[in-house]
Length: 273
Image 1: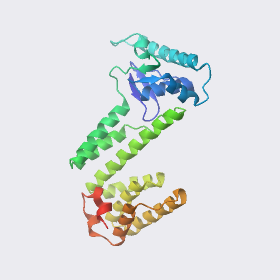
Image 2: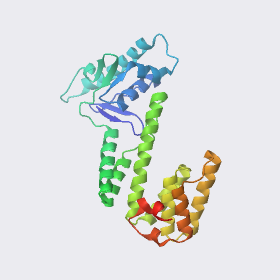
Image 3: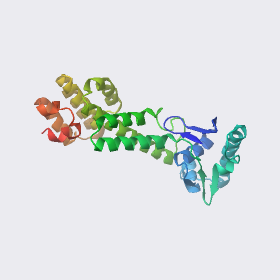
Image 4: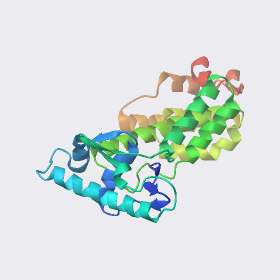
């Protein structure tokens, strides 16, 4: 089975979609896909579907949803000429206390994202920023929108969606860092302007934009980015900017020559003081 959750939910068995249209069976499938090849306990399915208000019929209802999913999988298997299992119960497997969706070696977009991100982190640690940027960019290209964007997420899937978004932001931050180290500040300006508009309190992205603007000869605009960032932090969170961001602002005001050095972005905030 091929699974994509980094955007709209996709689950294909032998090339045929097995995603139900009804909201709750879709939610059950989403739980199984984000934990593909792992047993998902019944208790977790109950919590995701009903929160704390679990009905007496919960067990029977979940079994009905599982049957519906198996019917979709079975139909896809019947239509396939490929070698492999023909029994849906071998794909959506019952275990004591839960269920497991067996991908049987199929593609899973989260796993590919994690693989490329790991390669990017490894390249970054070795100082190969060209490779780091390439791997991080490949990982980000897998995303097709917000994770599980077409699923009515409950408490557990909401946590998972948030975790995936944080992972994406981390990789995005690292890719931009690598690009700055490679002297690509001019190319980054448009992208960073859009990102800080979306993530108004994300200090790392604002720092990247400030540095890119400064290196592009736009020092005044870099200081304006800091001022807007500080206003947003104070008004929305009641916080002042971090010491590292304040050091960057001071360094820009002083036209610190170290900020013009390409290849030292990770240390720029702490070195410029």
